[in-house]
Length: 310
Image (cartoon, rainbow, N blue to C red; front, side, top):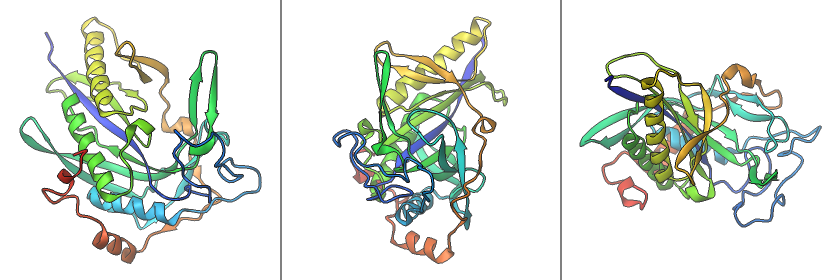
């Protein structure tokens, strides 16, 4: 019987704890308690004639995270329009970063199987969050209070190989974000969401096979369960002579299984182009040095261990 290994990369969406949204003055509120659609304005709903303005505190928080993840902070950032059409994004696009993100080429060390492993961070970029969808029988409710909230997307290299390693990384990253004071770490409220990209291959092979992505996992327990299930499912597919289809999946907690949501988009599907209403964001080295000097040091042995999520 063929022995398989998993190849896993993570996409993490972390809301940043600013007072206002990413591109407008609307307050950032707890969407679990605030009345729906009460903290919105023409900017975060993209009404004609309005102009976004970059939130300086969100940029500083992003730099702090990039430094803590040992990333290179890019001197010039360019925001882009990422086109897609879902009800929780009424303007039909998301302001994000693509070719010139905030931070690149970092790493985080984790402890797994009694060994220390270094996991690469490909990029960390700023964008705006979408609204919140509540699905009912036969229809969906949309709350736009969350639309436009500052979001930092962190993307790892595909260097994780087991559900246990994914859990160790998630706990370490959440501890860092909380320690820096940029995110509450309360995954039950959706302020921190993990999305594993998973494929499996024969052990010893270097090929990268078709992967699936499990969307919006909001607890580390579920992240571990869903990752382990999807690894086992893909192995069963190959062992039975089948093949894996590139899809976005959700987690069905009632039945402890992954379920298909939609076919997975590629960069071409999003039709990125530079955001015409925002100039390039130039970050001077003095700003990075100041934030590096004043930010807590998350790489000391006991730094993040003092937090309850370590």
